[in-house]
Image (cartoon, rainbow, N blue to C red; front, top):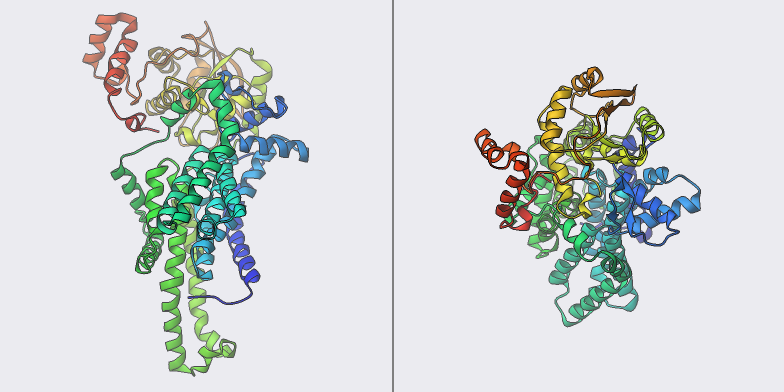
Amino acid sequence: MKVRGPVWLLSAGSVAIGLAVGLVARLPFFLASDFPLNDGALFLQMSRDILSAHFALPTHTTYNFEGIPFAYPPLGFYVAALSSLLLGVDLTQVLRYLPLVVNLLTIGAVYLLARSLFDSRLAALVATIAFAGAPRGYEWLIMGGGLTRGLGFLCALAALAQARGMLERPSVARLLGCAGCAALAVLAHLEMGLFVVYSFALLLLVHGRTRRGIAISVLWALCLVVFTAPWWGVVLHRHGPAPYLAASATAGWYSLEESLEDAVRFVFPSEPVLAAQGALATIGWLACLLRRDLLVPLWLPLVFIGTPRSAPTEATVPWALLVGSGVAEVVAPGLLALARAELWARWDLALVARPQAITARSLYTLGPGLVGAVLLGILAVPHWRELQLSRGTLDAMTPAERQTLAWIAQHTPPGSTFLVLSPKRGWEEDYVLEWFPVLAQRKSVLTPQGAEWLPDYVHGRRICLHSHLKDEHLSDAQALEDWAQRYQLGFSHVYVSRSPHGSVDLEPIRASLLASEAYQVLLDSPGGTVLARRGGPIAQPGAPLPIAPDCRSLFTETPEIQAEFFARYGADAPWAWLAEHEREVAQLPRWQLWRKY
């Protein structure tokens, strides 16, 4: 089904409708706080590092005082630093506004991609609206961390929107435009770079299997390598491949069967309210197959195989395209046929031939249906957002918390190391852990952000330890001491957040710490409680943690095994067990490590 009208007006109108839907979905979260949503502290510090280096690429980032190699794709940090410098605004506000602006621009990129793949403008319009309203199309992209994720996503879609035209009508301008946008995706976010590469490969397989298509694709790949070389060449010269080998272990790779199961769950969620999305996508999938267009039907499962960790975000694009195809090619023509039959039976075929002849009587007849559709939308949208959004991912740090962390920066020794306790259960949504090193300017011993670039699975070990801490439900100071002693976790101070966001009740352990003689109370404020551990840290901060790549430790084994190892090795038992166990897990495929990511 085609919609006719002036080309520029239809395109502008479609994008405007998508932007309107996008703003309605995103602004409530954005306006709820004056601070970046959820994460972004690591990126804020890396942007500051670039400003401090006068826009030279730093060797390391100062985030969390760990000497993390500056191996992260730097485009987003340069954009943020330059925006702050040119606009004269604080980087914190750049991280608040820029991800939202980039995500809204992504809606326009989705429309351009849909127009490059579909002849139907209605399909492109519906796909744009579906993407704009899909929570996973913005949830992880409008928060502070969306500075890199969102920018990479935008550049990847801009490249793919040009790819088919480049393959079918090659030119130097199309080649440079497509390869340039793909290179920007790589320079913004590695997963988005991988996303654009395998998506382009699929597009080549479906629409470019000619000598000319293959030749232009080889040139595209060469341009991609050359355009990104100034970055990866410098990083490899400074650090070698070690940071990338370490980061690759955090990608969350699954088996083919598990990836396809995730794709099915994405399209067909268990909640009845969301069943309509699966039905529309299935209709679109069948419509594409009937016209022998395999690109989008194959693209969606490929996303879950190629980038499983971030797949629900990237998969919103092929899903929206399937919805657009289903509505434009099946649902809308079917409804129009029913409407024509109804008008024929009631009045005259002239009403169909001349839509402007529809009278008030016909609108009165069709009105209840329109009102019903609006009411259905009003009732369904809140449930849609509630069920689609991960709980707590779009929260933000409160002013009281920020004031407390600023106090820590001013009133604790510079070399202090903190155990940060927050009511957030999952590390991905634990903004307290990520923002603490930047706002408090002190080291956090459990913060995993940034540690993916460090060797020896530091990132995964911290995530496992964070998970164990939450799972053990420690409620008193002595239990915390025993737990830290078991894992030889070195810290000199404790910060207990009073964040209103989170499901973990910290009041019992806060009360116990306040009453404990092992801790000195430095501050008890609405933003949190700050305590110093008497006698210094339990272990040397930064010492290896006795926890294995599969989140197991001697203390997760049976009492009999624990007793055996302590009898044989004494105080070295946790590391002796770890060495023995790591020899076993070393035989496993790399993707099976750190399955709790």
